[in-house]
Length: 397
Image (cartoon, rainbow, N blue to C red; front, side, top):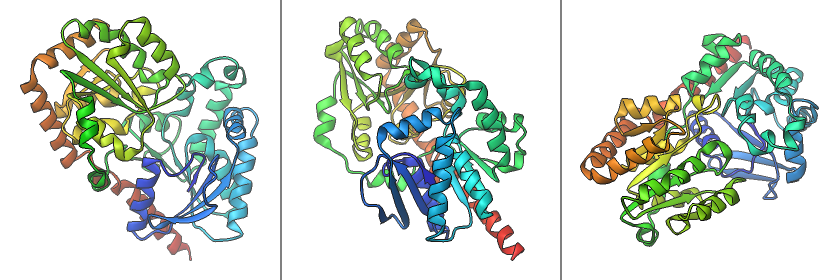
């Protein structure tokens, strides 16, 4: 596996690697990132090999990957260097922009490449601050990215995607239905159960009506929409919003909260280790996923939704297709139209006034996770894919 982010943490990558190790596969994770920890180490049953890349250089390579293929050359070179030290039978690239280098190295080594697409990268480029604002957007060519996307996904042996909507996108671009597997970001129950509960933290954030959001703070998360809705809610109750996470948009949100006069009701906790997230969720009366509705988020499915459901918290989400389908099918919360502050506030007020309904939604969500939306259930598709690949490889020998 090849990744350009610090690791750990990365929940999806870790869950995949551990599941494959348990299924009998040997995994090496090549990290090309601003990560100065040990150059090699064993972690959770698999090997990590780190190649330090300064943050500015890493961001520059990723930003220009669609126009100047420095990242493709660099990834291919690093994989070839690793190939001299060990053998491997497949290359698993995490995210679209890593696929060019993986495919280049895979052709030379004669091994198949798996493209693990955590999001629709082209759609995401229109949502991230660095790529949608100056000066970054001057160097982004969506036309060139679309050409690369179509070329790379059709050259990959298999695609691993998060939602059925993502699968439909890639089959429409020429991929065989059989080569695309859906692996949603469901919850690893065993790992989550192992996290401790911080009772003091829970008591700290308890209020008349505590709302919690966990995750990144970026343009597409819809947190500005959430803050604009808070004054309407505060007319009816002494609510508290706890935002756990960090990102490029945080300073703007803090300014927005002050200008709205709600700063005393909004707590920015900053980044917290995954193990602490459990206690923040348990401190809440209700959890939120207010994502901007767009091409990007209409195919996305965040981990946090299943964390909330498992811990028996009702959820309110915006009408992004995958989230809407799950929340309505499980009857574990409510869906509001993105951008409609009145509808959002009315929903929150109704749920504030109806704790019995909230409790039933919470129970429904928990049961849905136990029955379907859990990692043990979801990861079967990945293990089956690699088992077939192994059988094909052995059949050629």
